View 1: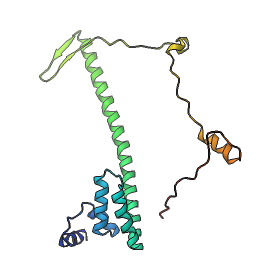
View 2 (view 1 turned 90 degrees about the vertical axis):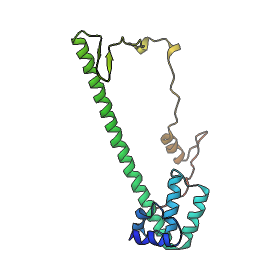
View 3 (view 1 turned 30 degrees about the vertical axis):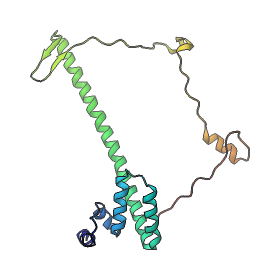
Length: 185
């Protein structure tokens, strides 16, 4: 089916949009596919030009709105998949770094056991070097106040919200109604 749409787009003289194949599932026209591509080229930012084009497409028909909701669903699903992939890659990165540290430690212990300061291989030379000086705080309660850093105070919005909802006022705070959202079912 995507090849039929692609042929239609090419016959109309337009360049086939990269997203058309993915969005064909939602019955999106080439205009929507090109809009999807424009959003991807803008690194996910909906520029004023993209927003104007989107408003024109949405107002065209109710069918377009249904298709737009399908695109929202697809983008949110892809974002969720990317979040999962980021977590998987972060775990893999931590595993690789830990494995590298273990191998580095093993090489050092082997050098120490052989009572060698350095060993040269075909590609690498390993040399035992002295440790670098660093500050170790043994008892933070004994450190003079001049060396203590204060954390920036933070506002407890939940507590302020409870007070404001009870009808009392809190200087410097108010309840604001957020921007209206969309519920897509």
